[in-house]
Length: 264
Image (cartoon, rainbow, N blue to C red; front, side, top):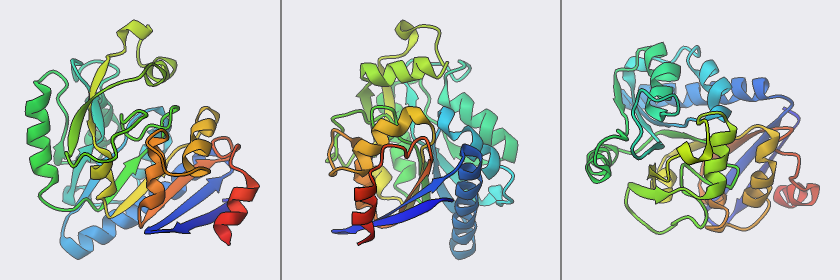
């Protein structure tokens, strides 16, 4: 880690950690994640988590799956899924989580979003489950357009619904194409089921893993500026226990002036 600062203000404490490489970032984030999960299990007998997906989470999930967590005591939810996509499709986030987390660690209790079912039914079912008890730790990323889950700008900061149907903007859809999940832009679905902003913010702790140069513009917009629905992940500034994990490339546009101001 080469730098760290805390952003403190009205009802908020946000820590940003910047690492020299994606690999080091992933290891450090996984260590914090594993400690948080283990602490929840020790205190309450179970840890309830929200797992993120996407290319930016590969190294983090690889490190987390070998961290020694007692996964039999973990209950998992996830952030989002495309409407109308099969869980067998290469771009399915359900498939992603099965291959990169669930099957690797033998996770037994999880709630996946079925993209082929009626969205209203899926939302009702998963909303009932996620509201049964607080989430101990949520893992999230930041989209190239600043989105949090699939809450593209301008994001809805007000809805109390746990999950919602969203329409994906063009920049978001281009990101999915650019990451190699779809052969053409036309193949990227127009809509998705997404966890809401307020539901994410209800987690006791949030770890945001956001490496790569392609995220630098969004990182600056979300964490150098004010909280705004136009920069959805900026809402993390208002969470009482959020840690933002960046590498040198994703942090490249953060201003020194801003860092010094946050340290004051």
